[in-house]
Length: 62
Image (cartoon, rainbow, N blue to C red; front, side, top):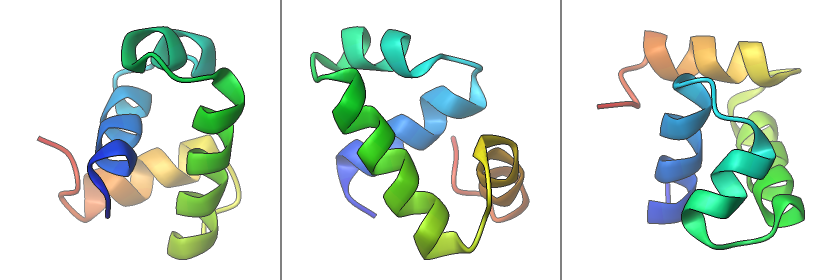
């Protein structure tokens, strides 16, 4: 995973919205959504909750 992908997934696990993540990372909300979509496809999850569950289960967050 790229550093941006790691940061997005960590912030999602902390219940940040796409808009909040975008502001914190100084990128667009659409970029955040694209990163999230790419992660969900890579890990075979269907939604944000599934992505967060996968990240926690597989120790992808600090």
